[in-house]
Length: 91
Image 1 (spheres, rainbow, N blue to C red):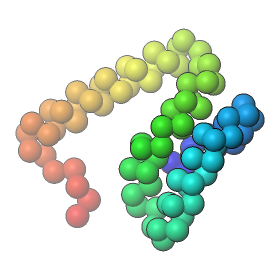
Image 2: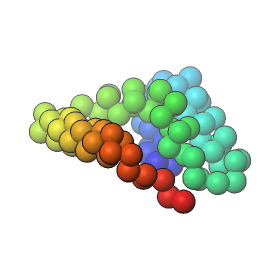
Image 3: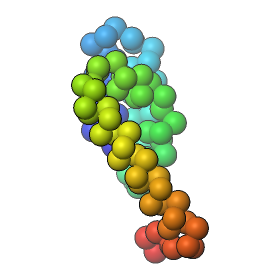
C-alpha cells in the first residue's frame, strides 16, 4: 500500500496537481512517522487523491471489469463469513 501511495503522489506530480500530491505526501509522512506500517491501509483509504490518480490512468475495459468482478465476489464471500461469525482477526 505504501508503494501505491508513492506511485499516486508521483502520478499526481506528473499531472501537475501539486495540492493533491502534497496531500498524499503528507499522508505518507504521517504513516512513516507512526513507526509501524500495520495501519497503513486505513491511512490510504482516507487519502482520496489516490483514487483520483488511479482513475486518471485510463485502465482498459477488461481490467476494469476484472476489478469490479473480483470486488463483488470478495464482498459476497466476506459478507457470508461475517454472517457466520467467522473471525478473520489475526490474534
